[in-house]
Image (cartoon, rainbow, N blue to C red; front, side, top):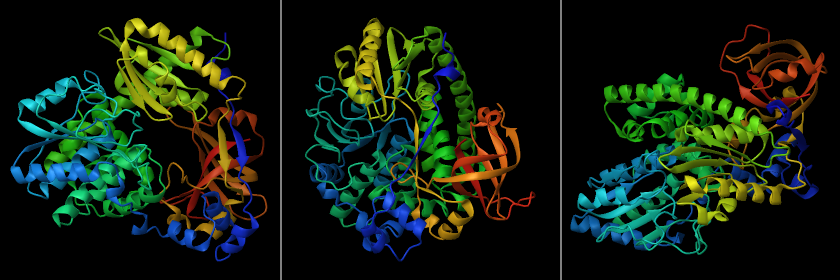
Length: 570
């Protein structure tokens, strides 16, 4: 029988290609390591470097280049003029919640009160559903604006209530045949000419607001950018182009926010508001906002973001903090259970992890699948059996497009949707065996002969002291970091181990005090999840690392304001 540790692949390190002479000459105004980092991020000349390091409104795409934007705007203005009831139909994740909050506040700025509807993750699932649409119709709503709900739900339109115009705003890749709704505002449409198609759902909602306010000759409140930053980072959207500019502006505003909900959430998460960055959003704020939709009702997070009452914000933030703690516990339990089930199956060279059952809570299945996919570098499907259906979350690796694979099983699903590496589906339980067999076949077909091994792309080989000397003032200008603009990763060889100790509740992390052989510099360093490698190392190590600012006072003699986050070692 294979054990899980035997199935877990080691990581490989890949050093990026050295900057070419033309780009090097064009970027001579910068230090050698900065030139290499810029080159690695697609920058080839001085003007591109200036825009990358100092992003400006030149990166803002014209909202009218999105399909159906003008049509959607005109219909909303007509509804405003005639006093029609408008509703926002949102999704229960942080992107959908922030997009709902953004539109709600934007309409409030026009003195228009709107309704909203966010489905329950367990009982209703992602996307539009007849129950939600009908409840809004019963309230007299005649215009529904969707945010982050996909484009594939209710494709034939048979469950649409009569007398309602549905305006879809979304960022998922739609099918060629669009649903029979009033408008589909989506930069991922094949007929879109929008220059930055990979906006988050909240980013598309902002473009609708820009279009609406422009048509009305009004100025929208810049505090909406706080919501854009939250949703974009939470949804792990690419942090390039317009996304990066919007997130940068939004984070700057969050650092002086007056929103009671963000203030209270930061307080409970142990974050200084003035220190908010993309990392604190991704690791501390977004998981708390997502916890409500996973284990309770997403309305809690929506109310937290929009309330002006500090007392209410404190209570809501406390609820989210408690839900997040429960979410962490449940995720850990499901990951352990998934490993047990998968290990018992004992399939040699299994190309996909496919596990589930009645006790695999759908609210955290996606998180568990993500951890399994990351740990074993394999596509992973985790499902829950609920009332004759299976509700599944899928996470994948770069080599296998999971949404493409699901499209090949479309006849077996009630509904499905997602992105290249994250998706989900709902299906009758009677189709479970066929779905599993078909996905296994597709994974075997695509991944056969490939050595699936997680690779760390290393920007350059450089000692930490040299990296800090060349980068100290520039590093902040390269942020915010994220997908397609990750924080710089470096390789340092022959780092002397001055001390080491195992840390963490589950003893999975390791803290080092390291010295550079060639200099007098010493460094605090931490390697998350690397404790199992400690017994395989000697007195010195090669490390792949990131520089992290250390805001705490040092007591061990480390002589710098940075510490090292070790991503891997040998």
